[in-house]
Structures are given as structure tokens and as C-alpha cells.
Image 1: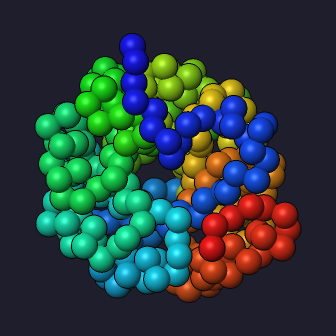
Image 2: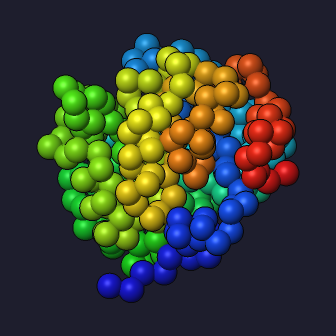
Length: 270
């Protein structure tokens, strides 16, 4: 199978020859009922502002990318609101990843036509792993992000779907390898245990996944301060750090985060 892996995400093997490959800072808009929301451990959602206002803010703040996740689409068996995606894509000039209820190539096509640069699949990919390959073959691996929501059960990190409500038989590293083989261009790894806690990323599993695949891994779940972003890159070996709470409520700015990281020797884009 020959998939277009694209220039933007051409694999981790580059890091050995280009040590200064820039790390990315990615704010995430968790969307429900037309508003940005934020919870803890995928529960207890609270309002975090207007979708368009947040999108504009992050575009102006020089975020490297923006993720738009309709967090209840799979749980409620419906599709992401394309009108909202179109409005956001009209406001931002940075890569936009959209996820939530994307369960077919046709649906992915609609999302791309409404301005997304990448689609994120999670529940649908577990239900039908070939979906990853079908989207990748049509749009390129660089356009396919597989979101992996994990929760520690005993000594294992198990993959969950339906906004964390359903446990799958897949273990995190096993599933990461599988989605890579199927053509995913990137993995968004979210620790449900750390989500919204501001206790830092789960760098143990982040490191294990990041070092066992050659596609980029985005750290997600638990960023509470700028040190946590730094640790995600150094201890977790992540290629990008996704955060919501610290940026949505203006605890820190993207620019502040990038300056902090640059001072500590992490290559970032300005």
C-alpha cells in the first residue's frame, strides 16, 4: 500500500538528522452545543467561551495548529456541525483538525470541503479500522489523525471510545502500531486519567507510544502549566503538545508558552 505521507508529517526518523525540528503547540476546542467546553476526566463540562472568539484568539496568538473536536458527536450518534467548522476555517490561517462523528470517507470529504486540513477519527476507527486506510488513500496520511483516548486499568492503558464511555479490547501501544500500519499520519494521545486535572501529561505512556511509532504523537490530557508542556516534550518525547484549560481561561498565552520553551532549548516556531 502506497500512501501519500505528505511533507508536513514525514516521520520521526527525521529527528535524528534535523535535531531542531520544531515542536508544535496546539490549543483544542472541545465543542458541545455550539460552545467551547472543558471538563475533568471527560466529565463535568463547563463553558469555556465562544467558538469563533477562541478560534480568532488562537489564530492571532500564533498557535501552530487548532483542533476542533465535537466531543459528543459519537456518543449522541450524530455528525459534527459543519456550519461551525466552516465559520472557524474562515477565521483561522493555521492548520485545522476536525473530529467528532466522522465515520465514513464521504463524511471526511464534507469536513475537508468545509475547510478542515485534517480529520481526527476515534470511535469510528475502532469500529472499522479500514476507515483509516480509506481516508488516507484518498487524502493522504498527513490528513488523518487518529485520536486515542486511554485510561489505565490495572497495569494496562486501555483504549476507550464514545467520549471515554466505552472500553475497547485494545491496549494503547498495540492500537498505536495498528493505526500507523493502516495509514494514520499522526496520533493524538489523550490520557483520560489526566484530562482537565492540570497535573501534567502521563509521560510514561506518552514516551512509550512516542518512541514505538515513527509518526508524530500529540500529547493531550493534563497540561496545567508551562513546565508540563516542557515535560511532555522532554520526558514524553511528544512531537506536539495539545492543551485547553491553560489557554482558554488565559492562564498562559501561546506566545508565553513558546518563549518559555525556547528559553529551555525546545525548538518552536514564531
